[in-house]
Amino acid sequence: MRHRLDAAQSRREGDCMRLFSILSVAGIMALPSLALASGPSTLGAQVAADVKVGATVQDVGADSFAGTHVSFPDGVTGYPDVTYATLLGYRPLKLDLFVPDKARENNAKRPLVIYVHGGGWFAGGPRRSAAYADWPKVLATLAAKGYVVASVGYRFSGEAPFPAAIQDVKSAIRWLRVNAAAYGIDPDRVAIWGQSAGGHLAALAGTSCGVKALDPDPRTVPARANVETVASTAAGSDETSDCVQAVVAWFGIYDFAQMPQVSAAGRDADAGSRFLGCAADKPCEADRLAAASPITYVDRKDPPFLLIHGTDDEVVPDSQTDLFERKLKDNKVPVTKIMIDGVGHSWIGKTPEDTKKASIDSLVASINFIEKNIGK
Image (cartoon, rainbow, N blue to C red; front, side, top):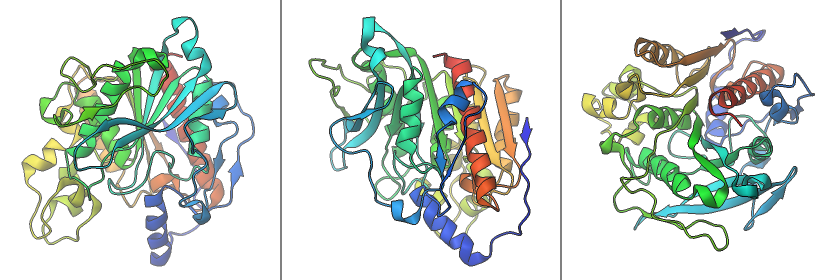
């Protein structure tokens, strides 16, 4: 499946690209705010119907999702900054949680969607994604359709290199499973979704279920559920699964050995090298590149994947998605690939209209894929 987007303007000059890099790390872009009119009645189109694309520079540092809990439209309660684990010497590990009120009615069990943010493994946060102006609202709208949604934070490369981030993501998956009853979650229907660095982590979680080397740090102390009168058991134990049933990955790295700026010597300290903890004056070790690459762990037991990438991505080449798709297909893993012509990293196109269309198309496709694979 390929989506065609017109590309009428030439590539940005270097100074524009530098600005793009700064803003995309923060998860925003300086673009006019654009709202989408109502479209077809698929679940993805329903969620995307009121999405705004085009966060501004002034949005950096703004927090529209604060307090102990927040009421969203259509009966959704948001719990910001829920601590899912602590690790001595590090900041508490937190996630934002969006729970439909009906998830707690009559012991209902709702499918769980876990979102993992981007930011080069050294920045970003659970409330930012690509060029979307109000990401918490997007997640709350998805929750209103019958999902419990968690947006997960993790340790950055400046705090701890690989495998810390994937260990944290797996800790969050286990914590949510252990506390499924508290939030009305069906622990057997879990999808994980991420973009850029988060796309890499989502894909790695999807292919590395049961890989002991990537298990949560044994020093991690799970937190209790943030619901009155409900006590949780310890998450992160060997008995708790970190497997998922569907994966959506946007413009992620899936094979570090095929990223020249990471595997070559004499390079600058790029985000991938910092994440891997590699020395700046020599290539990363092949074993380390492989250990951090989702492609390494692919086998027939992996869940269905949706991979989406822009053909003009100058941060992560779209060849990463091609390589990963071939590996999944070779192992008989169900995979859908969407290549969006004329847009780069974070769905940034040559015009605001291109960015808007790519942002909405990818969102609609992702939510429809999630519904198909874990229901609602």
